[in-house]
Image 1 (tube, helix red, strand yellow):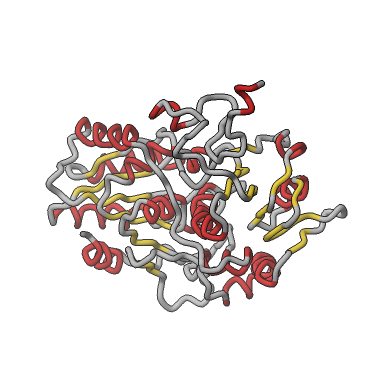
Image 2 (cartoon, rainbow, N blue to C red):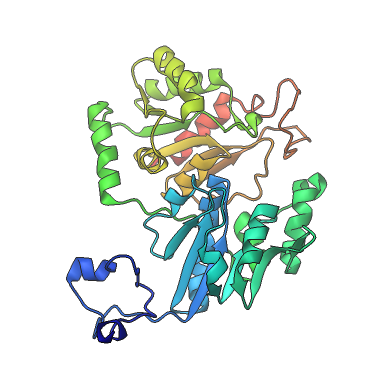
Length: 374
């Protein structure tokens, strides 16, 4: 008991089931520990999905820590997004909602519960958590999503009204400032890769014999299944890649299982200068290989937010989703088709020919790549 009483039980670095980071690294003990940081505020952030949205929402973390020093953050998310939060020094604990309610929500009490999404499952989990203050959204006993701030009401309206969404001019970072009542807009997305993960990516580059003396341009060739119209035409990627290779650049094909066939075909038809990053990489290895690139060409998908988090220039192609909400933070360019009034439709079943992504010509993307290559 005396030993337990000597533990700094209120320290932000306490892990309970294992020694803390500083004990393992430096051998320090609780009494007199120079890294002791008492917790003054306990926050729960409920942000489940999608993975790209989870990553871009990490930009709220610096703002939350600026409000109160000694803030302890627990982040509740979906299993697929949890690896994106690993190693983030501003997230103290990650809980996963995998079909059951994490028991911690039924026991612990938080200073504040932050739910930036209006989807009912997230709001329900946020409503379960005991707290003295809520920010963003919650759920009533009748299944009604309740926006807590004026900004949250506006964000809810945009999610339910296509006209309001199309008319929106604020970036996601500015939206989060209003939804959560932050002192300033949220910052860029954050991803903290380990040196081991970066070295695995460098080893991949050596094995794949990707020249180190050529600029490397990443092509994220897919866009997920929810919005298939976010995907640029196959022939355009092939033509752009051939032009870049002819000028001494190398191309790295990025994607997951859905892009396997497409990327293998690009690799075969593109020939020398085209390289495949693989289709079965865990998300952090995918991110590390994307981080090898000097620039990334992508639609509005996870790769865009990964590129921004890793401070890579991004040439982002938009059509059915909101380009206004995306902030590239001065590193890259957003390209939209010209002369189309139906952009930002959020229609997953567009039958227009050509569709919005088909209306983005290779010449415009090529010019942006050449402009933003370091």
